[in-house]
Image (cartoon, rainbow, N blue to C red; front, side, top):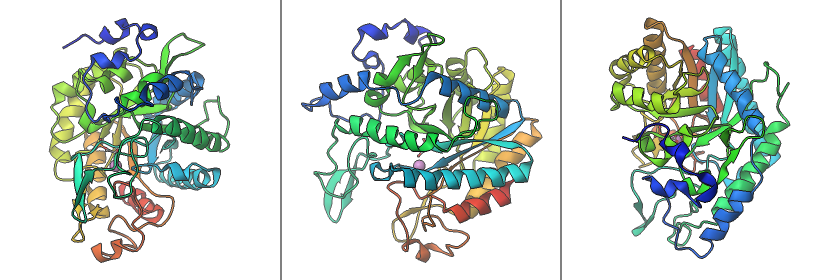
Amino acid sequence: MQPATSLTEIDFADQENPWDFLPATEQPAWRHHPEYNRCRRELRVAPPLVTESETEDALRAIAKVAAGSARMLQVGDCAESFDESGSAATAAKVDVITELAEHLSWRVAQETVRFGRMAGQYAKPRSNSLEVVDGVEMPVFRGHLVNAPEPNVVARHCDPRRLLRAHAASAEVLDGLRTHWQNPGTPGHNGPWTSHEALVMDYESPQVRTGVTTGARYLSSTHFPWIGERTRQLDHAQVRLLASVSNPVACKVGPTVDPATVVRLCGLLDPDRTPGRLTLIIRMGRSAVAEALAPVVRAVHRAGHPVVWLSDPMHGNTVRAKTGKKTRYLDAMIDEAVQFRSTLDSLGRHPGGVHLEVAATEVTECVGGPVADENALEAHYESLCDPRLSPEQAHEFIESVF
Ligand code: PEP
Ligand code: CO
């Protein structure tokens, strides 16, 4: 394995794409496209979406969670849509996050630091590259950054011009988001900041910038990027990219991980053991979390990393409804999150908060609360990817877990 510093030895300024030297899965096959080089060049000189000082504010806020004096809520769509970047859509999403955060704060008597899966959550890892719709085989939808969701072969072609559309849509969402910030730049500023899965290297790597105040490199595509469960290989581009920037970062951790691997990830992503720098998002599933989480928590604690422990009770509890649609049961999510909380409590560690996929409207994508059973899923199933909780279901979740 390469040492943690190897990436910083690559001279960014001289390389069109330093990530070409590292393996990366889940990347769109669009390099032959006539617009590919132009789009990457334009992204390299596009205005930064977030500022270095905003990422520092976000890191300071997460440090309060690491210290045990605050909680974190990370909430939003599984896949954001380019069609929902206007100020009204953003205001509706901010309202939902804020109300859920107030609910959580009231339950636990602590302040809540807020993050949206917003302003960049446009790329999805997928288990299969192809699917069959009405007898026709086509590439799967990989998020608006890559292709279009309509079920036809033309829409599903990947198109690198979407790199620039994603940047423009993110800028618009951020414009809306910043109007909702209270006391920016002060210790009381609790977001909502932006976060998304740093997946597509052609989108992320041109947005690495040198900060003006510290001269450190930071990722200007979002305040708080995370690495997905499928792309957290230690020597892959996604891990090395986030190891090389100064933002607060997160990594998903699934049920099959071994504790030694998590410790190595922590060594790469948090070499200086900085409170707020690294969040581990636990998504093990209700039947695995009780056994798999404790050894990971013990190993990370022994290694001295002051990480934030966040529960994602969605991604380990996805099932197929009888209709064929993906769904999730609220009971299963509550069960996983309660086990997460009690495991951390019993080990004397702070259960930092939760990472949830929640819509801004009363969708019927998960079963529970007002959605009585799988037959009720059809009414308002609108997700572009994974099934989200409705705001009402999310409040019921918080009520039951905290
Ligand atoms: C997601 O957050 O939408 C996702 C794909 O998660 P994971 O990497 O945990 O599967
Ligand atoms: Co998802």
